Structures are given as structure tokens and as C-alpha cells.
Length: 312
Image 1 (cartoon, rainbow, N blue to C red):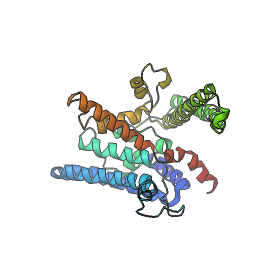
Image 2 (image 1 turned 90 degrees about the horizontal axis):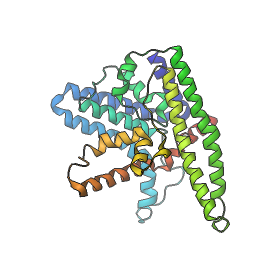
Image 3 (image 1 turned 30 degrees about the vertical axis):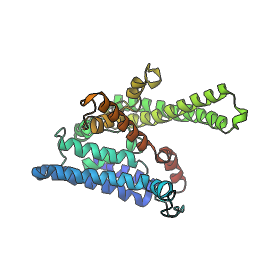
Image 4 (image 1 turned 180 degrees about the vertical axis):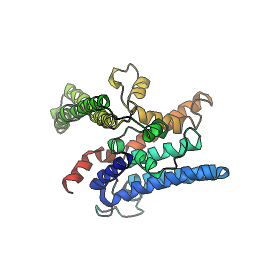
């Protein structure tokens, strides 16, 4: 079953990205050998981890921010000409998610929170697994290691998975798309034609569009994984029921929040060096999170993926 899922996930990505599937294969190989290297050469764990993290971040930085660096910084400073459409670097779909999964794997192995896998296909399936490859949620290897090795596919799991997938699909198709049309029409109006109440209505419609769009994709990923016997953690927990901004932060895109807390905020000792440093660290994490979201909104996550399919 794992071999079938791996091959199908690879074909799924290749269908949409063609040659750029080599990028995710490189990500799989680099993280697999980084984890093995830390176990085989324990005295060089720090150096090997540094190289592994650098490879992941280099992939992300090049493909996601190269165009921005040239066109919005160097060009504006008059240091180079603007990139033409043909010269711009293509953004491989899901690169933010599969590089983050690679990072969690090698860092958790370094921390000895999980063991490195001797099976390349298991690491490949973890990074490449198609339901959450494009839009998350971000999954830690420690949470699915045992499930990759042994899991049960049964009628009850399939029923629950199909139900969850349908809910997610309805969120996307019925709610998110409808709200998107409303907000697009409102914001297409001239400012002189818009009353303050209409602006607020458009902003609220857009906020709910983003929520139903993203949480819908997460529901579909969780549902499809459940059909295959995997249990993924929730990624949204009714964020608009929050009574404070900090509660909203904990309820919205939970897997990403956990990532930045466990792999950025805690390692820099977020709240352990006084009030000023705490707020400085919080600002840094928020800025880094915003910068991660930037990048043409990952080509609005999946929209370009299906457009690629239509031209395949």
C-alpha cells in the first residue's frame, strides 16, 4: 500500500508540475540522507543539521523569493533590469509545505524526538503524500511514523474520511467560491461608489472566503488521509469564535502556528529573556510568518495547480 501511495503521489505532483517534480525528489533525498548522516556521524550532528536546514531553506528562498528580490529590490535600486515573464523563476506548488515537512523531520531527528528512517520510501511518502502536499496541514514525522509502518484501513475510517472530504469540498465550492465572487464584485467598484458599510461587508466576505477556502482544503486532506488509515491533527478550530487575537492565532492554521512556535520561537528562547526580548521575538516570528505567506499567495495555493491540469 505504501508503495502505491508513493507512486500515485509522485504521479499526482508530476501531472501538475512536470520537470519540477525533481525539486521535491531532491528534497526527499537530501532530508533522508541528512537524518541518516546525523545518526551515523554523531560527532558531526550540528554540522550535518546545518547543511540539511540550509538545503531546505535554499530551495524555499530561491523558488519563492528570487523574483521578488530581483524585481522589487535590485530593479528598484537600479542595480539590474526587471525580469521578463520568460526569465521569472516558476514557483513549484506546495514548496512551502514540503520544505517545512523536511525541516521538521531533520530537526526532530536531531532533537531525538523521532528516529531517522532507514526506509527511503517512508520518508518520501511522508514528504510527498498527495492529500496534504499542496496546502497542508504540516505534519510532523513523529505523528505519522507508526502509521506509515502499520495502519488499519476499515469501513468506519472510510466512512468518516468520505464525510470529512465532502464537508471540505462543500466549504470550498459552495461557500468559499460564492463569497469570493461577492468580495471580488465589491472591491471591483470605484471607491466613490462604495459606502462604508459595503466596504465592511466586502472585507467580512473576503475573510470568510479565505477561511472556508483554506479550512476546506484542510478538511479534504484530513478526510482523504483518513480513508487511507492516517490520522492527521486538526488545522482549524472555529477561529472566528475566538474572543481575543491570541486565541484566534491558536485556532487558525494550527499546524503552521505549531511549526513557528516549536522550530523558531522556542529555539530562540522566546519568553525567557525579559519582556522586551519577548516582544522582539514575537515580532520576529510574526514577521517571518508574514514573509512565508508572501509569494503570490503560493499562486493562491491550488488554483494554479488545476489550471496546470487543464493545460496538461
